[in-house]
Image (cartoon, rainbow over all chains, first blue to last red; front, side, top):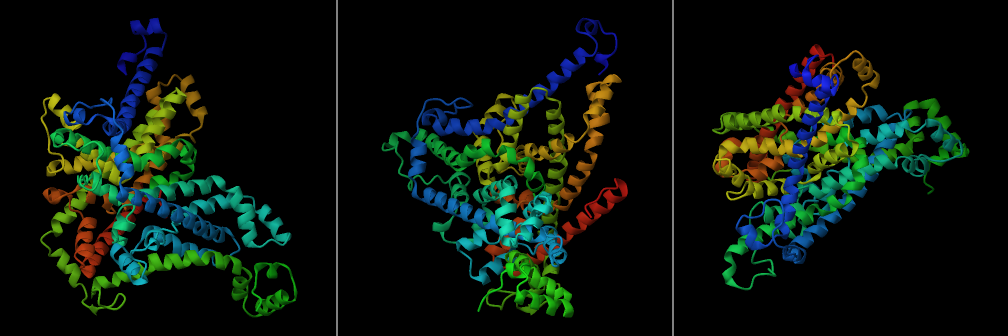
Length: 311
Length: 325
């Protein structure tokens, strides 16, 4: 910061402190533009590869802007039965898992938000411990097998149906609702159920939306648990199938009915096309997230505790 | 038979009064539970959930001290004491596993922890609202993308004839075999971790920054403080509490490495640096059906992890007067 001392020649021209500010802003803004580029570039690259001409990809000509144009990769991906079934499975798991989690987390949070509830303290203590300790994956696996829910949808949605972080988040929100509202409803003869479903929940839409967001994204992206708790390939969710396609490098060339390739002269562009397929697979899997992303941003702040700390 | 609803309790009809008088006089605790039976009913599924999927597995840790196999009764088997723990400590891979787990997690913590703070400080200085918003949206996004996709993109970018290698060879560094060279495993793991999470974690710090009163900046400006001075004397001190709390939480999570990414990134060629306790537990336990042994390994890991969080909390309470409990 020496250059920004008191009486530099340029200082006089620009006015005191101005140059310093301009340099500072320039530094920050250039830094952020670089960060912005690094954040976005991989996705731009994925899109470009997914729609570029196979020959150009195989030759390594595609860096940022797509070369040529084809939509065959997307057509093949959307026609692939295995992937589409996985897509359906994931949607099913995400929707039912989120609905279940929303209900159970809200019920638990409401009961724990009532100060006069005699079990509130002991239960809160018992539940909060689960944030710190867990039995580990092997005993959980054995419990799931023993419960007989292994290889069923329940193995995917039940073990994550309640999350103490979410309960705490919802409960904090319920507590912010004035207690007088609840009291007057009780005087009018309403039960806890009616108070919860007709007063508290409708007033807590933002926090519920946040929970829906986190639960749904978690379910959409889950890979390890389904791998562990399901054996039937027909029940596999998207991420497990996607992993076989894009990470194991096993673009199932023979399984996919490739639109573009009847001729054997196309070995080189075939390798390019397989890259397009993988990238199209990625785009199809993150498509729903991209679509809802602009609308869900306002809920991020509500969920900071959960999203950034839960880990 | 008519079932009780909570309305019965609030409307003082005959039966409600009877129950009230009976239990109020005899046992206050039971009376209150019955009065709040709607709440008990609400908390019942959650309680059942935590018992089934948290406390039962916690109880299941006892198989670490037994010889359990799939033919045993539920968490049954013969007691063998510390046999599995001894086996693990005497295992040829024990030192490698501990070293890999520690190094990968600590390096990840050391390198990735400051990034969201720096990003938040930078974003905080941007005056152009729409540019700030654009940068935030772009840096938060990777957080919502699955590990499978992240690793898939890494493999695509880091291919031997991929973009990253094109750049390296253009710069004269030469092409690298990123995924089979043990030297690259940790840098790749850590940098992708930063790429995915730094943006989203900066939200926490931005929220803390928003609570610093603007008067402080105004009076500093009047006193002639430069922007950089303001950062060092106002902004960063205002963040210290948040930083300490997040650091304790992270230290507690340090050995709870995400299984997914290591599992997706590693292959036998890089086991010497990449094989960590969670992946070892998976291979021995789920794939090798060695349940007792792998539970012992996992338990060993979580005990160390718990000790770490207690130490971190103790130090921070002494040094920074800030603690989780």
